[in-house]
Image 1: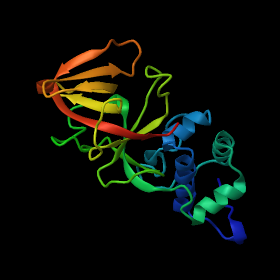
Image 2 (image 1 turned 180 degrees about the vertical axis):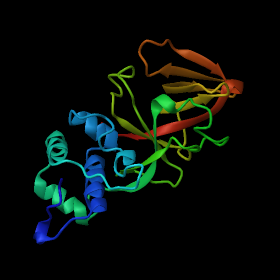
Image 3 (image 1 turned 45 degrees about the vertical axis):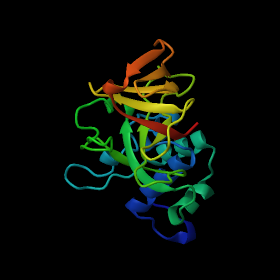
Image 4 (image 1 turned 45 degrees about the horizontal axis):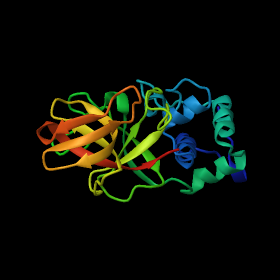
Length: 217
């Protein structure tokens, strides 16, 4: 386990994990996205893996850290610096796997994060207090977004024609799309999933629509 430190001091469990979170943020990834890019099990760096059910601390292995560094092109010196500073850390925002976005209780009536499935991620671009992040699962949205990409969604950003947006219907469906046209009666959407046809959605079927303001690509 990694307990080496610069200046010959012992690093704590929390410091090592914070450095890994910051390493992921520098690459625009969630902890699971970093693990996947490093060729590891996607849950390797998840918060749930950091402490056992009995409260015992779990440390990342030197092998997993080495693979994470190689995957992001970072050096061990960079990793050591991330222990002590906020380089690339950004503000923490709520994070949800996009595959869970349509689940009941994932959002409140205003379209804000709700429920127990959300975690957190530190990202370099998070300007308003309501911003949340979604992690893409699978390659159905490629080449626009790929497995492990993270997108930031802003409830406060104005939505205009040509924007990439997240739309939740009153029936609970969550769609990533480009907004082609918006009128008082309907939305014209081009889903980012290339297998889906252009879609016109009555305004009465729209629970909320929010703009994607940043992506980790």
